[in-house]
Image (cartoon, rainbow, N blue to C red; front, side, top):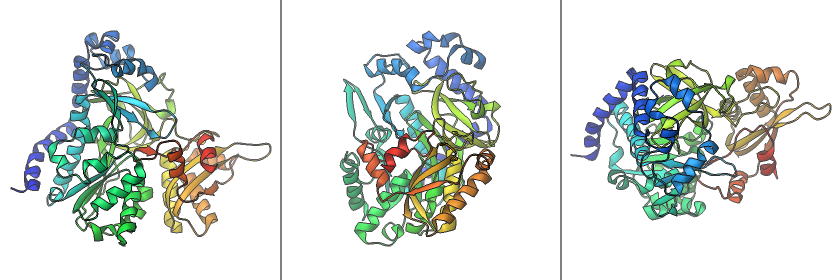
Length: 497
């Protein structure tokens, strides 16, 4: 019996389970909450906060404070040193080097066996399950799967403990059925030199029958363009005519979609979005052509949310899933089977549906611009630059924005630094569209534009400026992302210099 047929049969049970939690979301989350507290009640943190005698959500909030990474680091440090039963029962073997939006400091996020099996791998399998459910004639397992991760080297912390990018941990623990369909081989996948790895991946996958590709859009474009360069091909579907699925995440896909359509001229290709981080696999697209994601409620993660208009770091008041509202910006708080307790992830989301619970990622709690009271978030700038590119026949690789502060009698402004693939012919038109779109999306920005803000300032960067900046900081690779919005000028000054 063909593998695709076997897999289609296996996934039916999981589809029933997914449908169960979509119809019973609050009960499912209560079950997860109960299980987490019961499992960790004899750990160091469980004893400190009396998990054993915590029987209500109100008591949970009263006893256990919100945590940043710095707050949990003393516990994580003990786990790194090999101590057992600190944040989670037993010894934690794996720690994910969380890069996210680029800064000078890496975090080591504990990744327990439960988090690997019941969260990260479960998310990957569920996406395929949902895809087969939506596309019964899919033949993904008759060809190869190409995943472009970050730096996939693994480093030893001490005896029995290791750290690396999440993609490294995933590769090291891949089940056999995923390993046999992967391309390129493990030796190339685990190469540390990013530029050399891109070249080797392109060369080795040219003649494969690739059915699935997965990775951050900005970096996937680098690989696909390298494949076209060395093959002298005009489109990817000439090289991989059976390419059927692109699983993407990490950044908003909309600004990149026109570039993918340019180099992959195929009606066969479906785009599916995921929201997966070192801290957990949170959501995935559950419908063809959807632009939002189903919040996955049975992965060993208990969710809380903080309205961003009330956000005050660890002093904030979080609410449960049953209290959220549509189209309101929230910071995410998680308690997980990875040993993170009431942890501020740093991402912001909004709910697009409450039955089932579906979300869009809107930005970061620390990456926004509010230098003049304008409250611009990444969702605003992504939409604006996408529209400006569409209407001026331009395309871009990446961008960053920072405030230009008031000086004397001069008004302030937002200063953009953009690395274009195809720059607009009329720069002034591009700036006008960018500005007008932001005003239409954000009334606070519109009000400040009439008072103290000039139109945006645009810096066009030379090719590879962002890559060179990342390389200089030792962060060139698939899981590192450019900081798109800043409330200060540190990033933009470095990049412009």
